[in-house]
Length: 314
Image (cartoon, rainbow, N blue to C red; front, side, top):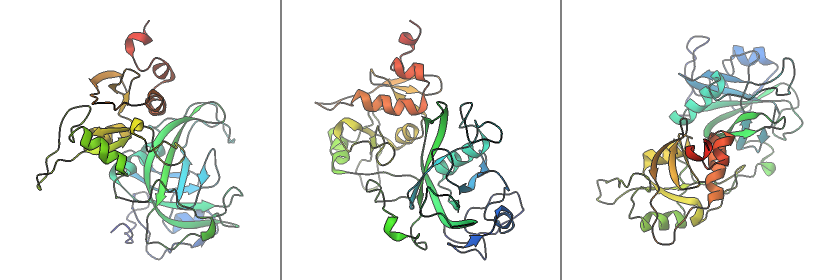
């Protein structure tokens, strides 16, 4: 089980869970104590992780563009800062080791230990030292423009249920758009999502495939183009929902695919057309939602041209 304590193994290896002898809510004097207890091994870095292994812990200390809402966190990745400064002087990269580690943890549903350091921006932070706040899952990642004008990598982490509650509980208000949980990622199957799936007879709008099941009922997923919940605040609206197979839903959510203004699915890294989306009856996707999603993953020039390589070369 995710909440079971796991053996620490060697000092630099990753382990995913709460270390033996450590409890949620435990205070630590400094980074050395955190490291010695195998809660967060690095003495300076805020993320412990690599692309190959995933990330097993982060420290939340009120850093650049972080948002602490208790049971869910918007966490900014590492890189791009000037030496000995919090100011950014270049773009962050999702390929940087810690950032890539959190992306792997998202893809593989690996739990991440969250440690809060003292900072005035969060009511959940300790008055001094460091507080072990328990296990979270990474549920989204995206690119955004930071306050210094450079691209930053941001992650949404959500606290796993059945742990010691965070204090003060009165300030720990959950995001209402994320009430139901599955381990690997969020699928919010609203009435509108079900309506879209029935409209397309459970056929993916990208590949036209319907997934058969043992019961004989077809399977598809309702994919929100502009993500629900904070900070994206997409609407649960027909113009924001696609009917997709699980593979294309995952590729779309993880940024491997975007949609052009012409409603063509594009492979993100090369902006190569994959397929024109199929539409039935009066269903449509708001171009603004497609652009918002595309802005998270594609270069600014591709967003402004709708991801159309012919327009980009004109």
